[in-house]
Length: 142
Image (cartoon, rainbow, N blue to C red; front, side, top):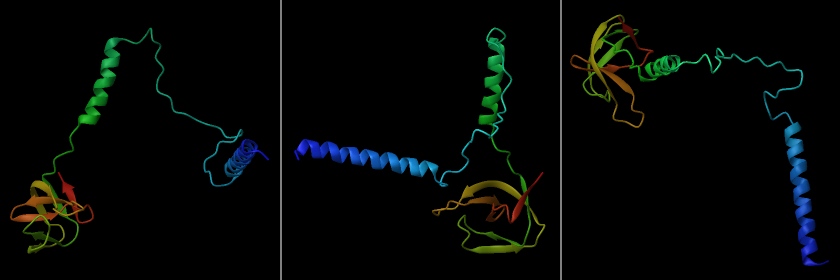
């Protein structure tokens, strides 16, 4: 056999094996949520507005509301209540305990900082130190 014929034959075998593998893979149960012809699809569509009914003001109102949602700041927390017994620490990494408090104690939050570790956990700054900002231990109070 000539070299070019062997090359074409090898290419044909590789292509046919690849096609067969793709067929087997697509027919297998590895794929989830495949739509069959009997599957009904329901889509929630926004209100359709004809281009002739669209005004410049309506477009601006829509974009402004989207901008307000994206640019809104999180609410500033002024007070937190301890859900469980909680400790106040001297530094943001919570290494040295200053004092322990009972469940239900309300703290005035002066700000927050993040731990100087790889995780960078959020901490609340309170009078005399830091407490955890973990929602398992504290809850925001109005």
